[in-house]
Image (cartoon, rainbow, N blue to C red; front, side, top):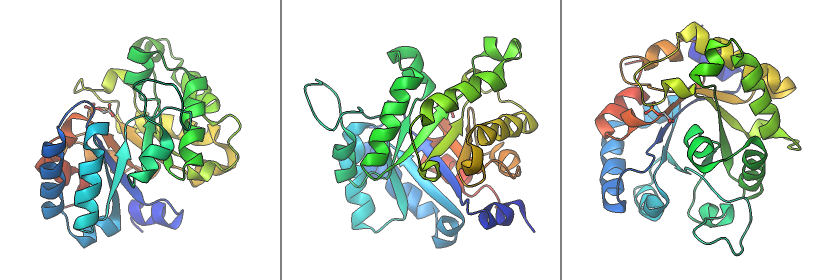
Length: 258
Ligand code: PGA
């Protein structure tokens, strides 16, 4: 049996998400999604759930092209506010995203934690807001180089998972992404054994839900290394930054087995 088939038997279909960060205007987004769709066929979508997370300003364009062409691409957002509505100038709520056919929302990305002071409690509130609006939270966790070098990665990540899931009863609706901060945008990656080991720690922190929750790897994933990560049974997919901006490169990642 292939690793991929084993994952499927456990109910975990591969999921590969492009996190565009602060890149691409709404016009570029249309082009990128269309080009991506030319390069993928139905067999690809059957094997892998494909997601793109453009900036807020491109979500409406993304929705329009995905719906008009009936593309099986999952639209995602990179963040949300936790409140349904209110006096929060500049913010976007989960119900607003759900109205745009957004299906998943990245929460707790390390760039949000580092540059915008997001802590585990806020990540938890956001994850709850995303679930309440009927979407999937993609919760990011991961250690700094300092934490890794001091040997505390497992404790750190376990703490982040515990903080993120506090008070959430049905954990099966969550997706996690293990993103070592030192691997993001650096071209450096942990070994696949290392990544799989930390992902198993994340599964353990999820208790009974650990077998059913999809856990992705993220950090300098590209067309050259994706297959190695995907060969690990515990790794259900990838959260891809830089290499997802170009549709050719992202399509090669999605079609990692070809
Ligand atoms: P990268 O980013 O692929 O550019 O390293 C990953 C991420 O931040 O999700």
